Image 1: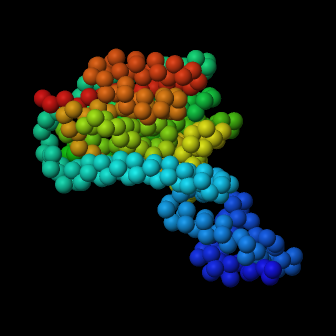
Image 2: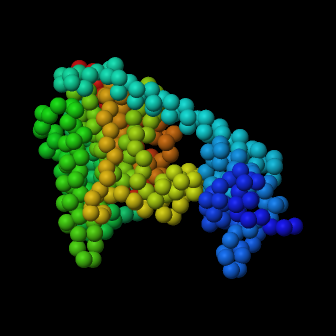
Image 3: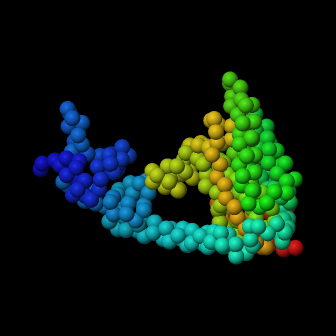
Length: 355
């Protein structure tokens, strides 16, 4: 049977040549032959069925890593895998819908106005750090104050502990300022840039310290969030737990590009490889967001020593307990120890209460 050029095969499969080249690179759909002189990819018409299946799976948004698995299954097992995937998509969509509702509330100012400087809430909070059971040093840092909540995770090695402490120390002067709520993000961005330069300049020819940073700065009922790296922020509101940050890691970029599935990413040997951190590179890009604090909210900030070993369902259960922030911090650290505590653990729990 005559082989098809990549263009003809792409049209028949309703794919693009660019997609076919990517699928070849990933080993998902290699060509039947490659022309020895031109290097053109050539495809057998019998490959169309697999190509069309890939196209249909991509149209429902399935990551390429999961598609590779589905394509290796028989029809019945493949149907079950697609059903399970779509069930997860439906659950994730419901979660995003709730997050969108929270965002609309924040933007509309229905709960408070950005220009209102009068505090209507207070914060009850606690912070905790634990070296874990494997590490012989602690590079994590945590801080909990009435206006500032922060966690940082320094890279293991010389200067890691100093870097994480310096990142949080750079934010502490902001607690003393009385700037309008609208200026919170600008202030945070400036402080993070200063911290980045401080950590970067502490490097030597042999070692460059880096650290992650996730922090919340409060002014009245407004909360400014800054995030760099794979430390995390969560919000418990109305009984539901929302993750407010996205990891700046290599595996997360692979998930975003469809090259890895979430389950593969969670156990990947390079899951801790950062693509953004304070101290790395000439400049740093921080994620910034402005939120509204509501009475009854509970925030968790933590390092990957907690989030990487304790699943979100267990975090949710621990945070839903009405015990004090201090006891909740100890419970979370205990959960990490129940799972071996292979890394340093830092966490902050903060409750928003009406005054």
